Length: 517
Image 1: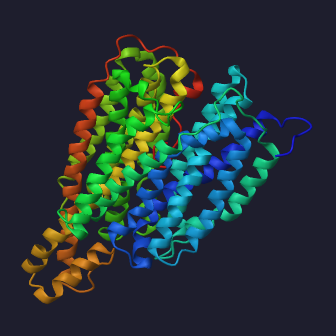
Image 2 (image 1 turned 90 degrees about the vertical axis):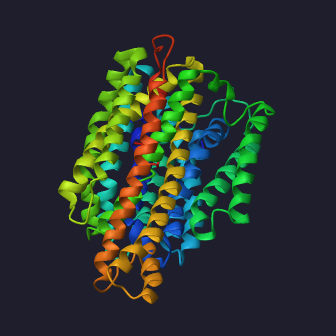
Image 3 (image 1 turned 180 degrees about the vertical axis):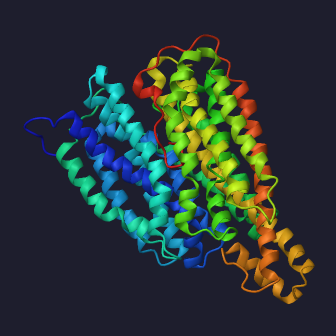
């Protein structure tokens, strides 16, 4: 990028980066609302459609640390602009996808572009503002993320009409052009000459391949068979690569993940808690949209509005929980335990669902508990993780924690999808048989249920509805189990000292497209 005669105003820089961030965050939450419409329109199975979420989130978990390093080396403005342009292009490709395989491929590429943008929005702002104004700037940056959390599902509901979902991606074309223009005009050039000019591509490749193999196995297990050579081979290969990853990291001078971070017990347990919490909460989110639209008959807009009480609570509580957590010091785990307990209770409440349940009595109390838990946990976990380490490692700690969250979300989507499909395939035939449906019609009705299509006649319609409720209740049991593990991990966050003061940029959690605003 050509040098400017004078640097732009720092507030214009903040505006330019926040426009890109807003587009990124809104687009993330839009997809959850469009999940059923995408499956129906493309004639895709649930196990295939969930990759439009998990593939994207996995990339945003693995790539940000490497992309942040590239920004430090080659210029934050240049790398951010490359990511932004890539995000706009891949958004257009997603909107034009002709089949589910194309959409998954384009979503993975979009995830890499998003992972390029995310860490650089914060670092650009941190460099642009002096220390005395940095907290305010980062607060505004975090507020934009919170607004995306609220606006995304609603905007998605407005843009998804019937099975027409493509505008959730195509809307990024005009918005993206504005964001690109603002970035060219108002994002100043900056880089860190002291950063070593190397990126751990080997570690990135090994970790990405390992996680993809494991997630593919979990995703395809029901379809192919859990004891099939393909599934067992994928799990074994993924496990071997995961075991090799620490060896690869020790062999490079500047690893993707600084293994010395894991010598800190509080950081390890905060990361484990964040992984499990994200798997439970954000991994189950697409299936809440699926349940509301397939069972309750909600339109996408009604489904988006249904999340509003929870998302508003999250946006209101996140800043407060960070302040309270800082005051609690070494007892910060109490907030994380309380929030994880609230999420566990949200899953526990869902166990009473039956075919008479509706939104107000069946889902809303659970959503409110979930919003309470998210609002308490996200900021507090970030603070607990980074404050247990030396200040010089706070950036690495924050990046590694975000990686744990997003990988947890991606794993959760795959796990809950496997549970949901397994329950539909095992219990729905019993429901249909009990309702007197002809045995020859059962396989087709089960297939329709796994492809987001309702039964068209009675008594198959009522039996299918009961089968969907069965699946969501079993999904809630799985969520309760994961949330319980998250509570146990949170209880083990025991700093040996009061947390040291944390720089604003490190203490504020980076927004990520898992829904972890």
